[in-house]
Length: 432
Image (cartoon, rainbow, N blue to C red):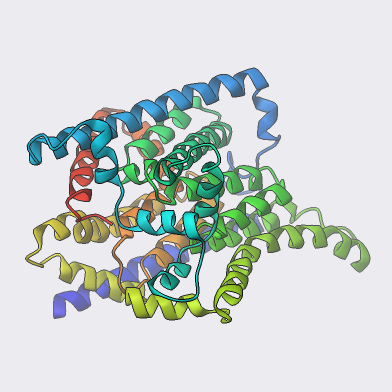
């Protein structure tokens, strides 16, 4: 029992020290903007990103990314198919097995919502805990692809392509380096749980909305950033966390622009606050959905406890409990869920802390908040998948690979091997 307490204490200490360091850097930046070497090269985007890319370059880039995305996902599909066929002794053809391999867990729920909407009675009432934007997009896609499952896959692939497109442009402008931008896209696609971005799950949709929010936020285009933040909050509850980096960016970008007089100040700040308010509006709309379907604004909380035995807990205690589960006799679950969840927490902290002085503070603030919230559910089955939605991790990985070029190939191979392992464990019901 003492070692569990030690893990809990270590988790809390790491988060506390990291949080204080991040707060010091952020406050120092706000207080001494232009006089500190922190974020000196990446504090502000001086011009709209669109000015750096002509429409021809945008189209060429989009086509390149589309090819890379489709090829990389097709390789994953093939790896899953051949692995499944070998293990199950030639169980069928590629098209026959595709649904059998990939239609699992939450995919059933999103497809159910896309087909039938939300209901107030029966077992399907519990599906209210799933946020509405992704199944809504699937329902729209059904107008083009009749099969709901394949409509969901199409939505995920389209949003993954657009996620990589926005991510490339964002990183290329932040660091004035297209090589780093391509590395970032590479690590998004190589991440061991990136197969979730190509099946009926919300990962690629959430990535698109959160990356696009940052893309516009860093340019000071607050209304666009707020709209994408709202859509992120309608995809997953993590979306509301975009409020923190956007508020920080507003203060940082406008701290030297305050006009004189209260009237001028109110006129200056009002549209920015309204744009910022769009992000929590996504959660408010979700609460309105709860009220409309069930008559209770917060019914989803009851459903989380009743059907998923889940609530909001203390992250350090959860990390300790996860380590305890790694000792379980269910080795597949330990390898596919508990060990990746436990190790992912500490690796994420390491990437965040070592990147604090290399990236704009907004990315670090967002990553820090996202990590804590992701590890707060009391029954955390999907920790590694949640990390897939934290796009700054891929920027941090790209910067690490750039600094250690001799280790880049080793990192790439390791990620590819882990990706293959977790794909196999996914259709063995050990990854959620």
